[in-house]
Length: 136
Image 1 (cartoon, rainbow, N blue to C red):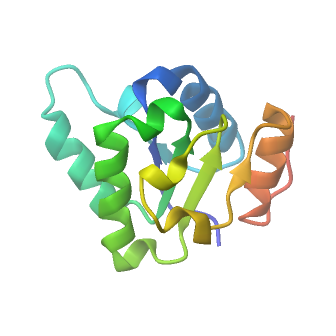
Image 2 (image 1 turned 60 degrees about the vertical axis):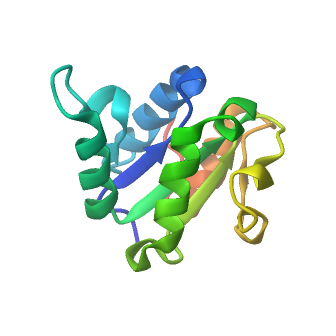
């Protein structure tokens, strides 16, 4: 089942990767919510993130050393792990080798999509989560 709307959690240091991935997902018909494109300057960012986490039906977290050190990535992930509507709808994406267990001891039980073999290969593997083929 493809997402009605996917929440993309990422560290600010990984913004370029998040931008690129969001573009690919949108190109494949997956609506993506994430802070860089969905929060306007004067909006209450805390409230906007909370509303998106309540509304979205899939949660994707970009894993990297910066993400492991990010308080906000951890907060978003811990919130998602507690929500029934995200049950079986959490997708960790490994951007770079890191000790992602530091975000949550539960992450190793999820099937992690590995982008270390290259961006396109990672996108192909990620899109398979929803039964979609990669369109370059």
